[in-house]
Amino acid sequence: FGMYLPNLLYIDKTWAADATKKFLESDDEKLFVCIAQGLSYVTQLSPALYELLSSEDFLFSVLSWHDNDVLSGAKGRMAEFVAIAYLWGDEPLDGGLLDRLISGGFEDALTNIVHFLAWRLSDESLEPSKQSRLIKLWRKICDSNLASESTDVSKDLSRALTALAALFGELQPEDKSRLIKSVVVGGAVSDWFTFSETLSRLFKGAPLLVGETLLEILHKDCPGFDFQGRFLAIIKGLVERREYQLAADLQEKLGAMPDIAEYSFLRDRESKS
Image (tube, rainbow, N blue to C red):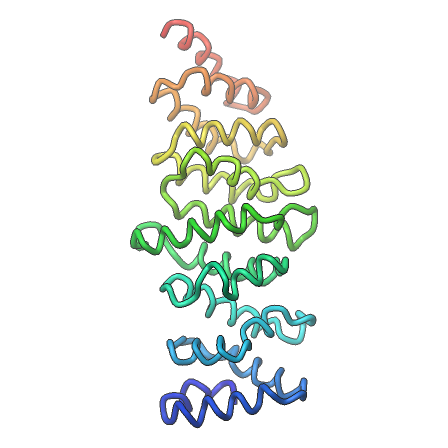
């Protein structure tokens, strides 16, 4: 039934809605699981389908389902539906499903939603209104108590939030603490690769914020040698913008790393400026 629900809605919206409501009112768990699994094969979301699934609280029931193994595919698909609807303004941030997921601490569901947005979109294709919606979602999750524990689920959400920030192009100074929070989980950086990618993409729009964020992160944790090229580029960029002191502080913090240690000239250049 779930697999063909979009077709049924197109043929007879009233009948399909009534049938769905009847099925979902049943206490038969197997029936619910079957509908959810069928919907996991639906690849195109229509406003009518989203409205129906939202009105019957079906989306929340799937996303908060206790058994990830049984409904893993359905959870992923429903998260995509929520992400798409939110991006287009059909799902509110406050007082709706997303609010319930955030306040309820459903990190796995939020990870799927944020991950879909972070990896399926590009900053070049985002309209300002959609970018604004993404920033509001990112800020709301960052301001919650989620993605802070040393668990695999928290680390996954942290990586997704860090990757999402790369789409913003530019962050405000007050967002620095949020970016740091999205990066550090349980006292350590959850994913240096994603973090370095995000900093590289944000640098052009907010070089000082990126440099300051990196410095604060380096007080908490240190990367491996594999990331020297990315951080060298940030240091060079700060020098080009005459942010000598910040560049020198980063060089000192990363001084034990090959190549970065060679940038001792930063201190000389600072003293001559």
